[in-house]
Image (tube, rainbow, N blue to C red; front, side, top):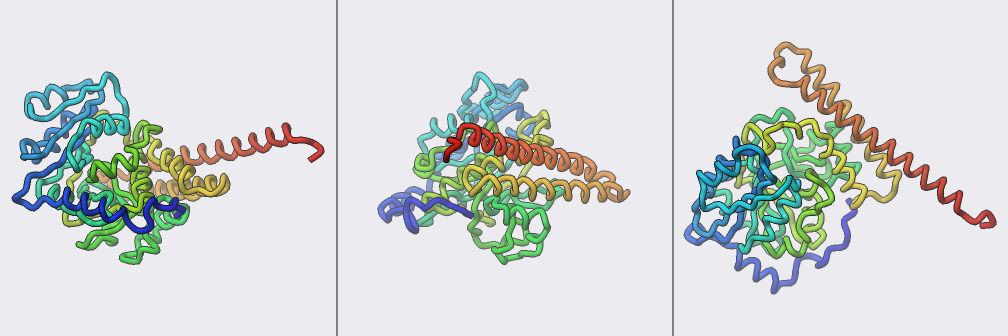
Length: 362
């Protein structure tokens, strides 16, 4: 892990911590000062369930940034929840740009990002906002419960160094338990106890932070259409000397479905390619490290693809969808291999150019 030096040696200045602590201590009898920002795109089948537990709560502002949905998402929201603020974008801006527009419009002291296909109860919301009262709290996230997941991982964990990716794809991390040295890029249920867990990153599907933390970190990067911007945001928050914490006492449930009803994202390799972009920009020390990362990850993905294909041959797993997972992970592996080959060719080209334009007498 190669984090930049934090802005503060341990925590932000005491005066700032005291101010934040006063802002984010909402006992049950106090009004929440929270804005919930959701991004929708053809999300009519899920977003109503996400908003229902939170609508009309005193002090809670709900903002939906709609990325030019072509279904009835906006109409359903306007009919069912007239108190919800809807920001209609003229085109599909992608996740990060839409989130940034939504947060910019908020005046609450605390912000929650929530996916349209995630449901979080009011008690969990209060627990998350209350956890921001910690002296070094940057981001707090609930435990995501996804009963439909076949892969058994949690959307939180350690930064994607070569070591953490190797631990994950080799399966070593599955034996780690509470031993943090062997935790992989993704946490496993066995890594989590009822106590808060300090992690490197949490998913943007549901996270809470102060508006001041958001402003200091600079919001979400807009260099990607979607995927990996949450990890990048967590990296910049931790670089400020603030913590990223998973709070198991708070839970959010992932709905059976997805934010984009087309389902096209399920086999989209952008998530792993953007993760490599993040690694190369923030963690990699050289082009060799970048290419090595690609090789480790591509072999890991291909190995998973083979394992899922073998599971699909078992008649008892006919309805589990392992053949689909095998095809997905094979596609992801090929995409990473292409990225590694491209990086190697670009490196060779740069070396050729430097030789061609160097002084022959040097």
